[in-house]
View 1 (cartoon, rainbow, N blue to C red):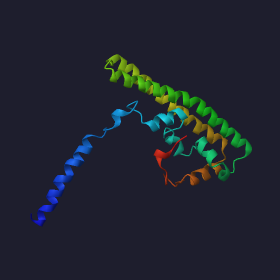
View 2 (view 1 turned 180 degrees about the horizontal axis):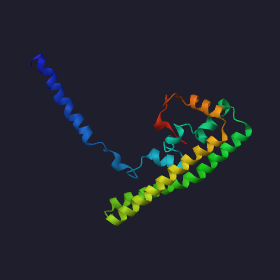
View 3 (view 1 turned 60 degrees about the vertical axis):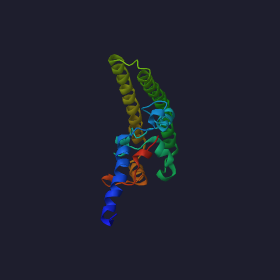
Length: 182
């Protein structure tokens, strides 16, 4: 074999594997208990974590209660501020955990309808509308507590929070949206 033919042989071997991987992006997901939700998403929903639902607030200067409590010392929260933020966090969990559990149940029901081949256009519409309403309520709840947190903090604390979280200038720096959890 001539040396100049080697790249062609290598490409022939590599390309089919890449094409196969691209045509099977959901391979392995069929074994999930609820196809539309990963185990991590289910765990986060059950724990009332935000899963990035409040990024519109977080990245625009509205701190989240859990993150404020994590940074309480460095933000120099007063006793009253700490107590009020802890109250917000407790209220947020009390509101978002049931919504998360409801969303899990709705997704499980939709999955079950498809798995049992009992889905109809009408049940599909009802299920997806219910899921959408629950997702909207869950997101609104997380955003609401970011809004409430801002009311408790001083402007200097919000500025320090943004610096500590790596949000400087016009663009957030060093923030991993996938790692944002409540």
